[in-house]
Length: 137
Image 1 (cartoon, rainbow, N blue to C red):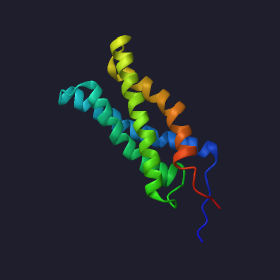
Image 2 (image 1 turned 180 degrees about the vertical axis):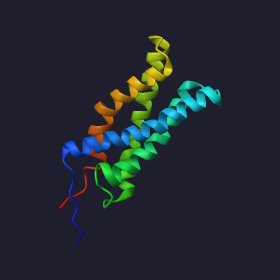
Image 3 (image 1 turned 30 degrees about the horizontal axis):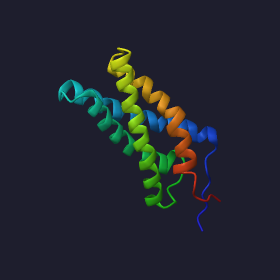
């Protein structure tokens, strides 16, 4: 039987932040490209970018941040989809509220929202709920 060792909290936090940064580059680039070049409504562009970023983050989280590639991908994907759906809603709502109600320019709204949702919501749920439910050696 193959041995699987769960990374420590600090290692998985560091790795997940790198994975999140990578996903955020994809997310943020998609947002700006869609809004500025394709003239898509910024809220719809936020959701699209978040979806693409979530796919990147799932792959990196499963295989690198949380070293959970040995576990059943279907169950992880279902749990991840639930967390990502809530994250998408929180990101979209946050960008909307900061942009429309506080008059913060949408890229800054996106950066603030993405940081808060990432650290306070995504990381804890991914570590414990999405990728932390499998057995480790």
